[in-house]
Amino acid sequence: MAFVVATLNEERSVEHCVRSLLTQDYRDGAIEVVVVDGGSTDRTRSIVSSLTAEDPRVRLVSNPGRIAASAFNLGIEHTTAELISLVSGHGSADPDYARTLVETFTSTGAALVGGRMVAEADPADGPMAQAIARAMGSPLGQGPSYQHYGERAGWVDTAFPGAYRRDLIDEIGGFDEALVRNQDDELHLRARLAGYPMWFEPRLRSRYRPRADLRSLWSQYHQYGWWRWATLRKHGRVASFRHLIPAALVAGLAGGPALAVAVPRSRLVAGAWAGGALSWLALLVVAGWAERDHGTHVAARVPVAMGCLHLAYGAGFWRAVAGRGC
Image (tube, rainbow, N blue to C red; front, side, top):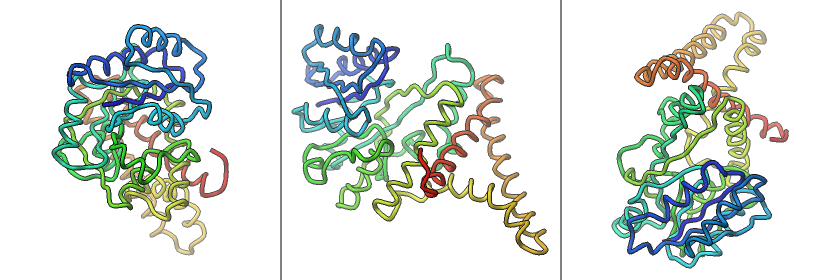
């Protein structure tokens, strides 16, 4: 069993991440861990170098391409195991992750498997970071994206982090290094088109540290939306309709007033736009209310965080459609 960890300035989390992989309860520790670093300027490389000296199962590889797609491809090249799992450099895996993953591959016959990505903010990062984590783990924030909250196993269009049989990568190719974001979704779409759907196993849980502020969250989801258009343009389709919901939201919010002005006797148009906008705002309020058990300071910020990720994703998509840079 091999793990590929992509890093770039992850000094706060990389040691915890790697140690969570080295302590897996799997076949007497038969684990490979390849950390692929994109040129960190903090202490990430020195921390990983210390871990390589401590445990020969850890290897450090440089990633001159600096993006996740090239990191994952390099990592896969530097592993020998038949099963390879991706890991976020600011995440960690539960102790039974490797064992459960192998059991899932064996029982389902799947060529690629994904699990739950649980967003957990550091309380020291403040209530907005915790609100962002709650928004990312909510069906109202992510739509029908079961990797964030699903409890039922089954076939899905995508999940992160993905795990793959080496034979699949050999057959369909690795990650598209023309994509800065959404490279995993694009590979999963190629796999499905080749007849290999992804199996989602909710017992597989990896912990993920989300962005801590709205500026960083906006940048992240704006890029997701921008690169979603690149994937759509490449394949002429998306893996799921849910990927287009934020774009439809932004189009409606921005285009409704313009249409109301352009159309004579536009009360109906204006009313429809107002109704849609108010419904979306009501959804955000409901999302905040649903998180009230996490404290007022967190719950009050959930609507803002959720609105940010919706609008950022949709705006990024339309920016790409317009041919403007990310």
